[in-house]
Amino acid sequence: MDLSGARWRKSTRSNGQGGNCVEVADNLPGVVAVRDSKDPSGPVLAFGSEAWRTFVAQVVERP
Image (tube, rainbow, N blue to C red; front, side):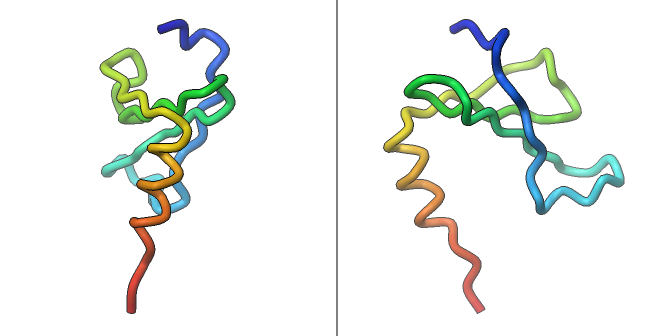
């Protein structure tokens, strides 16, 4: 998969203190890529756009 055009953005839940940080690239056609920001050249998880929307809809902060 060619990720050279990926525009990575860090999760708003990341605290910037070097802890657990996730980056997402959602500008790629038909796919959303996810990686660990501490290891930008490491492995990437890739999801189809519909699968990503389903995942995000299920990960809702609950009181």
